[in-house]
Image (tube, rainbow, N blue to C red; front, side, top):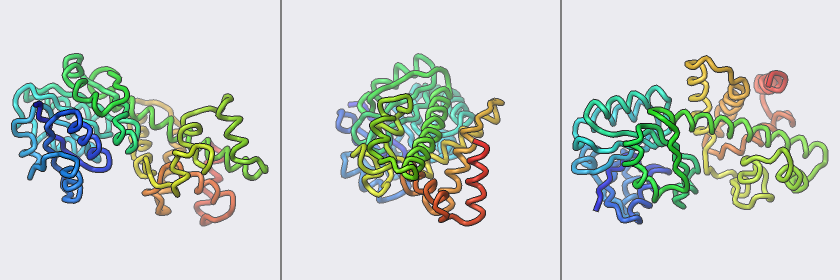
Length: 312
């Protein structure tokens, strides 16, 4: 039986590890939070007392962590302790530079590595239907792909080291911008007396069709599975969307790319989070847009919304 070390058993890592257990892998997990470890144990994951303990004797290492600094710390500690040739798979969403540094750390100790961030949210993690965007050598991808399959609906090899993170950042910038556009359309429709269902039926089969509308509609009713029907309990939290939009900004600045809509989306989500909404689903941005129209924001916030409206 292949033994996998899984470091980071939060909202995404826990169901991902559970799907590996269901596929017949022995998974040794570690997380800093005892409650996450307890949930993982209930799903068949073997509790490790430390990250080092999880990696000892493991034939692959998977990390799912909050930020680049956490990934680099874990790689710095674990790469020297893992058996030579162990594949390291990082499914965190982090900046491209940190991803490439993590690859270099792994290679320094003779390990194969891929950056493999995911799309699909908690629902996809639970269902085993995540999309993995992988960056790394052909050899590393070939070693990692069978391990990813029990957690995946689709696996795409995007290119060399860091390419997976680049793809994730670009994809989520599209998602953040399109959700704001869909939200604005529904707010305008409300003011014009057009029902949610009527707009959905037209736009979902016309040129306005997009995933933010047809799979994650930000108003209750048209798409029963969307968070709008559950008081915007998060499948993908607004704070995480803001994190990804900020990563896109950093990448654009480093690459010299102009992404004005991405910049405006980041500012709107920053305002939304600052108002205490970071824990809500990112589609709840529609309520922020309604507030701007109805005068429920502070004068400073109204001013910022007006600036966004005139410059986007």
